[in-house]
Image (tube, rainbow, N blue to C red; front, side):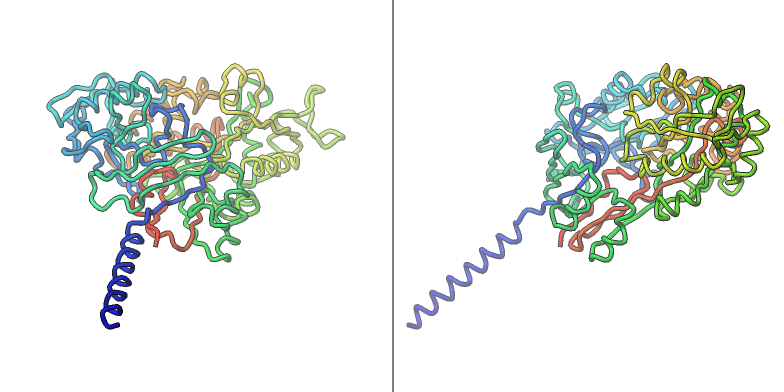
Length: 514
């Protein structure tokens, strides 16, 4: 009997040990609800979006307080006006075991230069290999901000043979596992990742949930552990239901753009009238639930050189808006709509259909229509896909007013200035497709000086000059608010830190499930 008890005790001990071992070895799977599909071919990374997924990495990383720090490059220095030297991290391998080195950097940058229109902003002339772990990037013009551009989500380092074969292979903390376009992407832990102790979870399943209600219900029902871009009306409900929320002011800003190719916006008085007719405070409080901040600069308001305290913009003043319209010859008619030369003041408010970045765009558009009606402008909303929205020929023909988003996905915040305000769209098409031809050449000179400034004071000086001319005096475009990004998570999720570059993939590195 005694022997039997000893045997039973031993069996129980073994069972407990095995049970504990099984628990310890249980795979940690993080399920994330996302609004945009991370499986796509738009970027230079085959089949996988470079943002959010953690598969690829850049030479330069960006911290949550927007500081540039070493990534796949351990340091960088400016050799001369046109040359930046990057010293590469040794001992890093791609997911297929092949080494990361100067050859792969040269390949990656040349691939991006050939495949991605956006890469023109890098102004890369050539990439020179100095040795196995040192490369020189030579630009066509002096570019002090190049290290910041090297942190962009599109300037990721790819393994050459896999890239040519269309296989997503990077150096990141997660490796591609499987995907179903429009449904989900699965990535798994890179066991040989160069940063020790990262990542914490074994697998991430990104579930595509473009419908806001579905994403919220999935979080509250336990279908996902984290839900990105919580709709503003649901934030308080999620908090009261015991879930955690994280929010941060992002680099993404919404604004209005005027098409001067068509009447009535060929008259600056009409453009200014629209600016004075828009009540940004009301939009932020009533449409965006206070989760945005009014801004007069296209750069994050909390950036040291944003110039926000020096830029007054066009304040809400419907009386002044009416006076400007009267001065421009647009008089109130019997129907309440302004008229001139027998024509009613009717416009189209064109809105890009991209809710992942133009947050609550439809609701904002509706309020803008109502506010314009109060000063005698009748506006009809047209919701358009990206290709149609940015079609230049359509812009010139259709006009009139555009509700759009801008921002940057890198640690170099001047990038949004360059995309939006460059004369004649020298290096990038989308940002200023509607009004780029009207921007004076001097703005290009100021942009060049800003992007080669070494002090915040000088950067602010040129930013203020640009914004006053383009936004206040010429009123070609009106930045009017920056968004907060809100993320919801279950209580068992630990280690999540929000990032101003809201699709920054490093946010998953330290996330753990308790």
